[in-house]
Amino acid sequence: MSVRVVLADDQPLVRAALRMVITGTMDVEVVGEAANGAEAVRLTRELAPDVVVMDIRMPGMDGIAATRLITAETPHTRVVVLTTFDDDDSVYGALHAGASGFLVKDMALDDILAAVRVVAAGDALIAPSVTGRLIKEFVGRPAPSSHRRPEPLGITDREREVLTLVGGGLSNTEIAERLCISVATAKTYLTRLLAKLDARDRVQLVILAYEAGLVSVPP
Image (cartoon, rainbow, N blue to C red; front, side, top):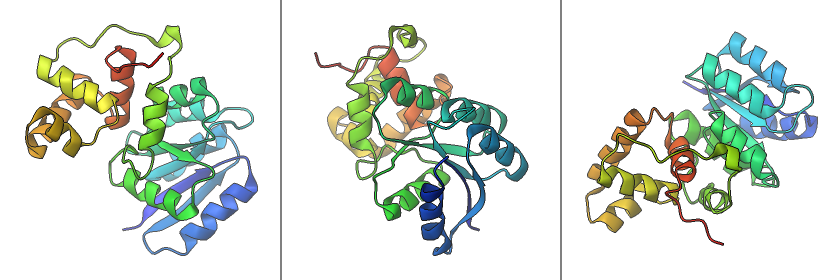
């Protein structure tokens, strides 16, 4: 079964380039296109795609507001935001709204396509080959003070250690090596954290670790 995608971007050339690459694949198809956030929300309600590739800055309803509505109304539809990473508040807002990761507009089109497949499979774009460096750069910057929250309660000391490492962008294998545990055990801790903190995916765990002050922020 192919991955059904809605493209949301106010630049026709961006949508055309993505559509051209996707059309040449057997496992991904474009089922709709939107030029703004409101259209993206409407198409998602009508078509229930697997993934929405969402620009952040669009006329009318922007990508952040659209992402918030889509993830609330259509939980099985995952959103990947397009960004130039030049606006911390926008990136933070998109992730906080429920986006499952980042795509950068100057990425190779094949990499964007691969990222869509990763998200459709239920993962978040934390893999170093895709956006690890972006997550690390993001969590290394001060968040707006209005987004700060107390450290999460109801987790064990070991789970807090794991959450801190997830916030630092480490993979399950790296976490296992750092804590001298098996990869399977690291995955178990991750599953527990997702359940206890009511997090949608790994990206939201990064946000929670950042908001709680568990991630070291360089001066």
